Amino acid sequence: MTLHTEHSASPRMEQSQELSVRLTRFARKNASQLGILSVFIIMVIVFVFTAPETFQSKDIYASLMFSVPLYGIVALPLTMVIIAGEMDLSFGSIMAVGMVGFWYAYDATNSIEIGFLVCLVTGFVAGLINGLIVVGFGVPSLIATIGMMFFWRGVVQVTIEGSMKTFFEARDSTLNSILVGETNGFWEHEMFWMIVVAILVWVILNRHQFGAHVYLIGDNEASARLMGVNVNRTRIMLFASVGLASAFAGAMSSLQLSTFFPTLGDGQLMPTLSSVFLGGTSVFGGTGTIFGTFLGCFVFGFIKPGLVALGLTGYWTQFIQGSVIVASVAMHIFIQRRVE
Amino acid sequence: MAHRLELRDIHKSFGEVQSLHDVNFRVEQNEVVGLLGDNGAGKSTLIKIITGYHQPDQGEMYFNGELVHDLTVPKARKLGVETVYQERALADQQTLWRNIFLGREIKNAMGFLDIKKMRDETHRLMVESMGFTSLAVTPDSVIKTFSGGEKQGVAITRALYFEADLIILDEPTMGLSLEETRKLLEFVRGIKAAGKAAVFIDHNVFHVYSVSDRVVVLDRGTVAGEFMTADITLDDLMEKMMRVAQTGSLD
Ligand SMILES: Nc1ncnc2c1ncn2[C@@H]1O[C@H](COP(=O)(O)OP(=O)(O)OP(=O)(O)O)[C@@H](O)[C@H]1O
Ligand SMILES: [Mg+2]
Image (cartoon, rainbow over all chains, first blue to last red; front, side, top):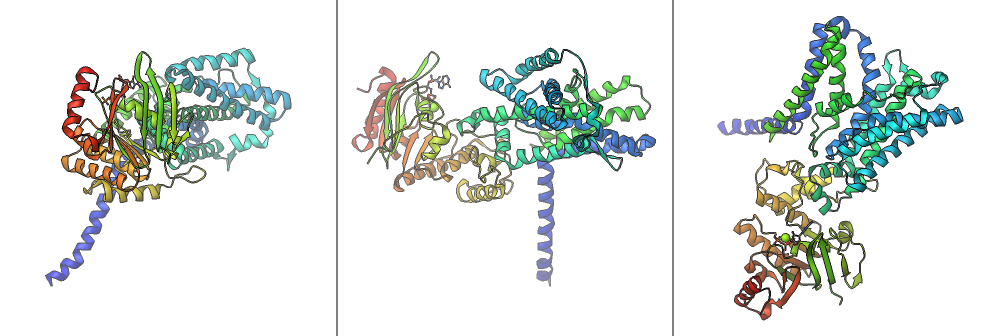
């Protein structure tokens, strides 16, 4: 009898133990992502209950789907750059450089589609040039891309001489509605593109050799080189991917307004970088996730409308944004220490 | 039969420091060559030239009798070279399976990873070669918290997994326990028995003497001499090493 109970009890116990081990492992492995997820959920709950008029209406979510992707689409590939231990500060200027390409092509062909393609190519090439400078001259990317931030902005100013360009005819184009239109009067297509970019970058980072090398380079460059990883090529492609994404985001932003302002991308730096670090990517390289950055973008995006809805004046925005960023990064470091 | 590897007149400088000067070095098809020399003698620099990590300033390299230009790490690997580097060449914040397959991930033609296969292989290696018994360690464990010897075990296992026929071991016993060291030396003898070749670097003359067919002594970037272990006693070898350290000459 005793034997019998033992027999029936032990597999069940093993099973539940197995499950708890698995859960613990999962929590450890994804601690950082669970952290930012909690921040996000708590934030949503707080806003939904304290400012129900705003946060229980659809408008606020439509507006977030409209605005967050403009920096989110850049923050996602930028996450890879930072995981690789590099930095890029020039993406805001590249958004505008891409649109210079757009404008010349559009002016010449009167085609939004060709303009858009040229815009992407221009951004990609600009990023490629950033990468070549970092790798070729061995300038630390933080410094090189500060320089390139001014350089690319200068290219914009020299070429279009500070004037804004409008292309209201673009409103009726199919491409316009594909990129920045909406479905059922609610689903903003910008959001769809951000999800596409997130999936793409996630697959590259987690399922492709390129991504494996990104983690290795950021973790220990010497080891990566000793084991035959093509560090230079990987780095160049990283900067090129941020250039491409920047041009894409720049085109979206301009199509939303049917206008290209030469200042396009000027306010991009802080939302984009903040989102990456909110998401738990380490500035020292080697660790970071796309899921984290994706949520980080929305945590950042929620703050401003949340505060407005709570009736706080605009003066509070930066104060709270700053606090949330510092608190989140501290949380990530705390989690990291506890897990190890 | 051609030499497995032959280096002729290799020179290598880092700025002002001349690390290797006029070095000739060869490994036969089925031979274990021990490389001895003081700290900074140029041993690691020499093997990093063989693995394609450093490019020599001057000199020629032959693999199986064929002259090879512009050797790179992937190219050397294709030529059958595997290495345990002195600095281990691991990535601390990454998982065990990523470290085992560092730089040569199993992937398809498009470059997409076969993660399941890499995990399974890592699990197999953990059980069969690395002697990880703790249940806390899985292929998904981050190696940061591994002990020095465990990390060395990862670096060694990795070099063995890929079945090269010229295996280079730069101070592989570093951080290993007596028992693990014994296993490693046994393994080096196994390389010989399997008809393959190895270059073995260690500061312990006993280790080098006990596994090598031939010993090459490097001193301040040049080859000071070489001996067949069959022709020299351990005592004589030690005496000569001592003399090199003091006078820079073997006799
Ligand atoms: N990447 C480098 N840059 C500059 N100098 C280097 C570099 N690598 C090696 N050296 C120099 O070359 C010389 C030989 O170094 P090496 O590492 O080959 O010695 P070693 O024989 O392996 O020594 P140890 O037994 O201490 O490992 C040293 O003087 C070292 O400082
Ligand atoms: Mg050395």
